[in-house]
Image (cartoon, rainbow, N blue to C red; front, top):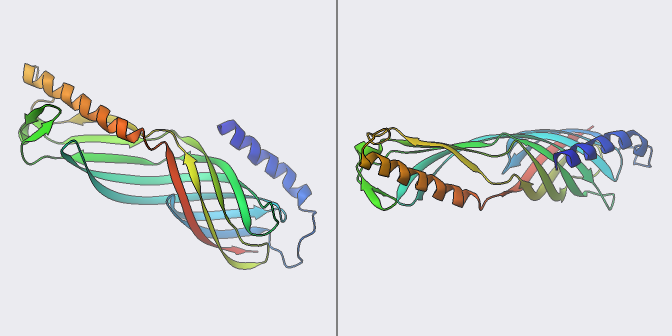
Length: 229
């Protein structure tokens, strides 16, 4: 998929100058600068619309947010960091503002999770004390490159300020849970209790991974403002 996205970009860049010879309004502006915000984060966007039917864009999205959640009786505090950048080819089939867009995105999105139980807590089929558990930590990440596909409105070729919106999907694959550990008294204990605890912790990690496997497609909904020169 990554090769397809790169090939599409190269084709658009090669074809752009030739296609730009098509008829366009005298007041048209081919280059645009703006800002976009939504589920991919907030960031800048630069675009070049060769003519009324094809264009190319590059944008970035950045955002940090916290989210608390529970899993199998354990309360976690999650922190997500959105950081991505993409190159997108836009097709305007009717020559107006409606566009069909596809491209490839560097996906640096990542997350951390943390839980510090303050009372006896059941993990798997056993109950452990806060001292035995300590603090459970882990991280989540996704593959670095992912294709995206959206539908939206990108405005006309007219110079000036315009509004744009798009919705679609980023095909990022499953979120991967990594480095799932704890620092309690049983974390390295070699007794039967310690071995049992670590096995239950592995089961807890696997349960979280099973839930993460349901989110292989990340929704895209972005709105923005841009100025076309």
